[in-house]
Image (cartoon, rainbow, N blue to C red; front, side):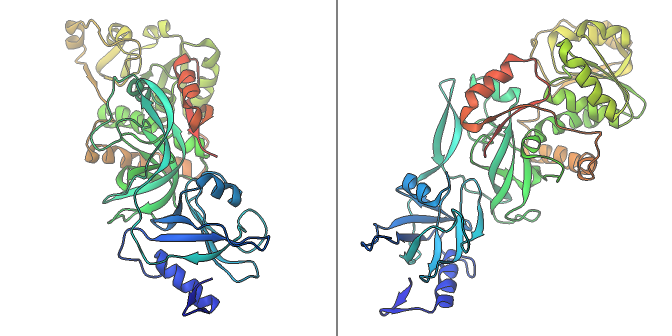
Length: 452
């Protein structure tokens, strides 16, 4: 109970006093307030020692005795705070951080009715920074599930409770020390795309609010319980997407859309060639090109996946799927989306149409190719390459905004022509197994890390 001069305060006064301290009515000037919670004893004994929680945005997180706190609450990896208890059952709100990052009523049955009664220490004291967030962490080429300090949203940034994070080839390279995260992104936490719920806002955020379902393109740090994303590279999650689908959407569809339309200027009626079409970016490219009215030829090495790729492509438009050694005879091609790399370049050039364009966005098959410049000149062709991750915010924001305008509408209305195939999901703490599955190949679509 909250008291003043030994007198118990009116319940409503208690509630308003606590909410004011937590920033729900008037935000405190300090960044964090310390809240001490005392558990009621059912056996008539004195209450157990106080536990502490700290304010993070509009939620609280445990400090100390976290495992016991979680057991008492009946939830995992979340922080708990009861507002007031009048002796008639809990009154007010339970503030949950971590996985859920939302408030739920205390009245009623279920694990929300945690028997904490007294609330003490609402003086607005600063609380020491402590590690609180777990993340997939690269340690000497290995992956560990480690604790890190909470990320703090800066200007224009969202703090996101991550529900799903797709794996990409860049994550594989970062694990091996071959692809450093861009400045400003965590150097040891991989993850270039994510989906989850907004739990806190940096200053000047205009588009999103706490509680929004979002998916984002990030430079790194996506494979964690909490991650930061700038609102300009963040998209709303369409109601038609599950969390794993949303977690695997931003990187592949932004990369494919940027390469095909912004860089190569693919037009209605042109013929597009997509290599590695069973992978994430490949299957996104097949669908985007076909849906835009282009004729698509896709190469897939695994014969067991060709029919599936053909079916996905056919729902979007005209699509044919062939073995990698068969594509030259299907040309000429106006645009080539090259995801394999060096081994394909000579044949890509042979199959290129006049004024054709080749864009290299993957080199899984190798990076050194021999190029016949006379053939390129005779065809008035263009060949260029691109990386999305290292671009400055302005460049990535432009690519994401085009996806927002030109792709999301086909998902928002439930258009069955576009989908995000998910090959497998793994709990985030089992990232090692997910990375191994990615490297094994032979998959259709995305491998996605998830949190319950």
